[in-house]
Every structure is written in C-alpha cells, then in structure tokens.
Image 1 (spheres, one colour):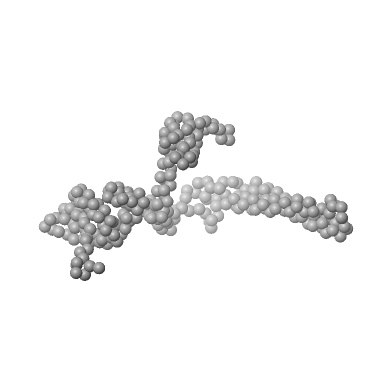
Image 2: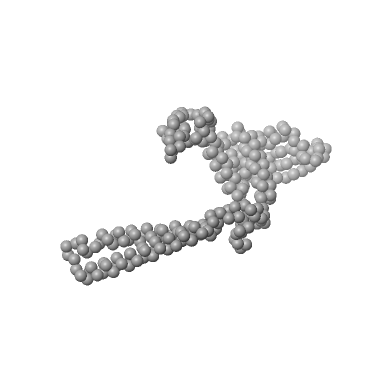
Length: 288
C-alpha cells in the first residue's frame, strides 16, 4: 500500500491521519487519537472494517441474523436509568415550534422587502394591506416565541433521566429475550463458517470463484441428496443431485473427493461419510 501519515487537529484535538493512495488516484483516509499504533496497523484497521461491514450485510441478507426469533420479553433492572420519554417528547415539540418560528421570521423578512413605503409609488390602500399582514405575522411570531419559552420552562421541571420503575406501566421498557437469539446466531455463524470452509475448498477448482463461489455453495447446500447406509463397507453414502451445468458439477465433485479424504465418522456411529455427485447418463441413440 502507498500510505502517508500526518498530524491533524480536529476540533482542537490532536490526531494522526493515515491516507492510502489507490492506483486510480483515489485517497482513503482514517484518523486516530492513539499515538502508539504503527501506520500499518492503522491502515489494516481501516480495511478490516470493510470486511466486517460486508460480513454483516451478508449475514443479514442470507442468514437473517437480525431477525427476531421470538417475541417473549425480559424485565430490565428497575434501577436502570433511561432518558425520560416525556423529556424527549417536549424536546421534539420545541424543535418543531422552532422550525415554525424560523419559517415565520423568513416570511416576515420577505414581507419587509415589499414595504410600499420604500417605493416611490406608495398608495394608502397598499399601505393598509401591508400593515395588516405585517401585524398578523408579528403576532404569530410572538405567539411562537411565547410557546417555545413555556415549553422550555416546562422541560426544566422534568428530569432528563429516570429509572425504569419511574416510567408509567403502559410505556415501561422491556427487552426481547436474548437467550434464544444468541443460540440461533451461534448456529448461523457455525453454518457460515462451514460455508466459508467449503468455498475455500472449491476456489482452486472454479474459475470465477471471486464472483460466484458463494452462490454455488448455497446451491450445493440446498441440493437434494440421497442417503444410504452400507453396512458391509460401514459407510454412509451421500449422493448429491446434479446441478444445472457441467462446470459446477465438476467443481463439486472435487469437493466430494476432498471431504472423502478426511474419512469423517458420522457422530455416534461407526459409519464413514462418503460423498459423491450423481451423474446423468444419456443414451446416445436419444441424445439431442
């Protein structure tokens, strides 16, 4: 990598910035306050994050890792402090009213620019019309300011944080039961690691491995199989149905050979797992 380190100051805080220059001239930057890390470690952290984000995206799309497993809830410690909902509601209302005030003041400014007294062709009728609108806007602005002051005073009387026990029963926070969720996530991660291991076995035998390897592995996993016990040979024969094209079938056949070399015993039995992919024989007389 082409890396460059320089000292920078962000909001009066001294930091170190590492930039990577790509072949196309694009620069990628990362900043840190850690004075001890080497340039290489900082740069590797930057690109490791991309790998983590890609992994999370893949797990959400293909393994539904963020899916709610069940809707049972656990009570949160009643002494645990949280931001007061009422405080937040008033803060949101203040923000809304301030937005209205800004719009009214902008309207007042625009109206001021149309003051007929500033023009040479002033007319009494236009003066009265302008003054009426001016007074209406002024009154609305004063009402908004008064309402904002009242809301801010009301918010001062409300604590910013309260304990769970102080919350009304109808809106009291609970949390989704985590035990089942953690168990399912562990199983999904084990499946992902198995998929990754198969992908690594398949990669040397598949030309477009960097683009299609995951899709092929998923197709293989979802493919129906025949399972047959051979007591004489003490094997459990697993025959995969063929996939849609010869290239994929040849690559999976290589994986089967690799797996068979491990001579894995099926748990709690003396049967050795034996994998193969079925082949379709075509009669030459009926070949089209």
